[in-house]
Image (cartoon, rainbow over all chains, first blue to last red):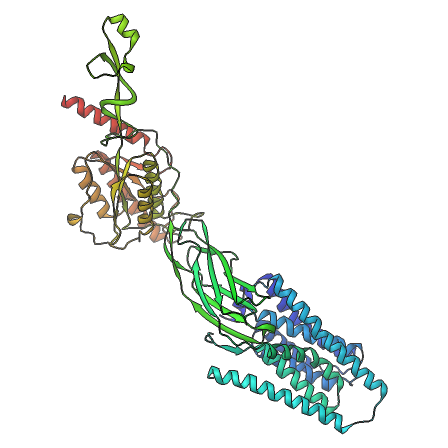
Amino acid sequence: MSPLDRVALSTREERAMRAVVLGSALVFLALVPLGGGVFHPVFCAVAVALAVLVALLPESNAALGLVLYLGVLWLLSMPGHLDGWTLAAAVDLYVLHLACTLLSLGPPGHRPDGALLALWWRRSVLCLGAAVLVWAAARVVAFLDLPPSGAAVGLALVLLLGWLAVLTGRLGGERGRDGS
Amino acid sequence: MLRGSQWHASPVLVRAALGSAALSVVAVVVGRPDLLVLAAPLLVHAVGAVVGRPRRTPAAAVRLGTPYVREGEGTLVRVSLDHAEDVEHAVFALVGHKHVVARPASGVVGATDTEHAGRIALELPVASLRWGRRRIGDGLVAGTSPWGGYAWGPVPVFPQDLTVLPQPGVFDSRTASPHPIGLVGQHPARRRGDGSEFESIRPFQPGDRLRRVQWRVSLRAGTLHVTSTVAEEDASVLLLVDSGVEVGRSEGLPGRSSTLDVAVRAAAAVAEHYLIRGDRVGLRVLGSTRHNAVHTAAGRRHLRRVVDTLARVVPGENRDLDLAHMRFQVPAGSIVLVFSPMLSRVSVVATSTLAARGLDVVVVDCLPADIDVAGDDARAALAWRMRLLEREALLARLRRSGIPVVAWRGPGTLDEVLRRLGRRGVRTTAGHR
């Protein structure tokens, strides 16, 4: 089944979520100049093309590519301020991820039920709460203007590497079991 | 793409895990805490998905709510997932079949289990718009673990047998059978007996019941007279359904009907009418290789047998029918009702053969008036017109040889023709006397 056939078979809710995927990517691109960043027309055009692809194939790994691309774009374009635009970008990126997640739960024609939406609503509050917490903590640290600490960075890297090791074990193990 | 019946990491988990990890590492290395803010929601999602990693593999089974339905009636396709403690959301997608509709129309239904009870039931209402034997319920089942981190399936589930009984057309007949031959029934017979239909007033004979005495006539005549009635007997009807040829496109119950649709629904209606009145009905299907005969019997259980056999009719299953070896086994005095569009040689020969045996044969013409065979093809339209002319000539020949032909129009279709057959029978009997 071609991606366009899948769109044609989609329910109204699914089409709305595909529109959310596209819309959230566009909002993210708009947040870059609004937050004081540099607007790159070429990079933005690539991002839009990628967003269209993700809207057509939300259950594929193209969405991972879009998330990483937007992250790199943010890194290159933004000065790194911890203002409200950063929080808005985090919310927007999560909305994109959530729309792709809900679209990948079933084939075209699948209508998410109320219990599922309620469940994801609670989870979204948790995820966005974490973003707010990290944003607030980062602002506090920035406000205190602590001297750079090699130990803190090292500890953070160790934690991250540990998490990556866990993920590699989980994902690698699953793929090995699949034989792929 | 089928991924098998094992759990595997979903693109959602891959996206959340790798996206958050990449952003976090860059944030720490480059010293950009704003990237850490972007990564935080995805990180929470990834942690939730990994913590909720499934252990047990579910098992899917499908069954139907009921294996028998009438045309247009619905049943449920029930898909159950056992050992589904780790399944948070399950989805079933039904494979579409002709004349089968589902609600929702996409045939996709999902269910969320927030209590992790170990069993998830998915129910999809389906209905068949045309009679026949169908295999439905096949499709794909898939499940996802909490936080959508791991996916199971899609796993195919296999179809189940569904017998769709024809919805009998509306039919009623107020005319009695011309030759009732049974013991008890509702049709006035030619012989005298205990019935309710008045026959004559005649002198009293030993054995007559006192309640039959006609006192007024007895007083006038001076001798005892009694009211005599005719016996009431049941009739025997043989339904002959021509399944050798099906013309026209069947669109199911609400749409246009093919010739076989009309024949099957009309035969079911007539069978229901006579069997509910206590008559005996038999069935022969011309053109079926299996299940092509139901013996003549009475009762509501027999009605089920007749309708079930009609539901198994397959059009054009056996075109090379050898009528010389076909036994119709028609009881004496039966009326034979031939449901056919009279477009095949076999049905014409069978009708003529039965009429030649002295049976009362009635052809019920099952060619719908609004049939569209040719579409926009001018040559096909011309060929169809020629075929119709041939058919008209054939029907005229049947009429000339004394076989009545009536078009199926529901209630009252057979009234006039049965009345004429009854009169013909009385005349013949009077002539013999």
